[in-house]
Image 1 (cartoon, rainbow, N blue to C red):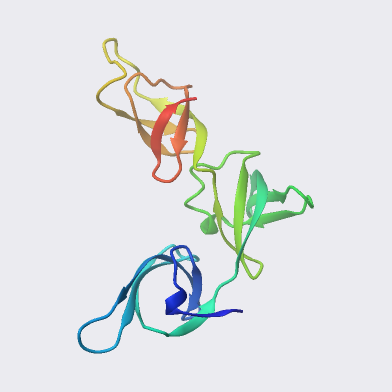
Image 2 (image 1 turned 30 degrees about the vertical axis):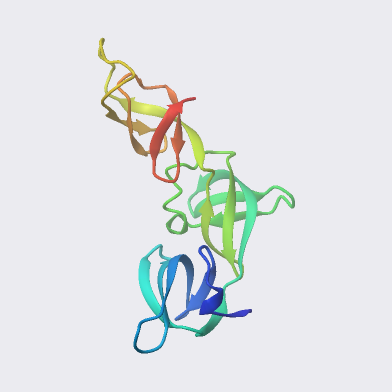
Length: 187
């Protein structure tokens, strides 16, 4: 593994600290008037999803975590977890639901995703920035509600609840932003 110093920090870099894998969300080099310089960071644990503030001495060295991503297709859910297939080798892997709980609200059969791995251990998946989901349940539209103003909750077929405009009905297909679970448009 490569060793890096705090001078090489950049947003998105993955490091190994205290036997955990962290992604740098943001960082700031600080040079106080008195004492030595340090680097203040906000880190996200890739295994648990926890976000933590951590301070390092300037020039401190640590291991860079080598994260691999593989493009795979989601096939189905079985009793042991969620089954994905590598599109090149047709190899199938099963990922436990607790490893990908953030992405389950967007996962649909035959969807292409990126599996994030560290030393052959699956630590998560990345779904596309937008997905098309069908509304399974919402309050019916009332005459006079227009495209402007107001919103109502709608439950998608995956279980995700999204605030949508009043004109959306059950059965509509909607484009949803996966970064913040917001409605973009009708599909």
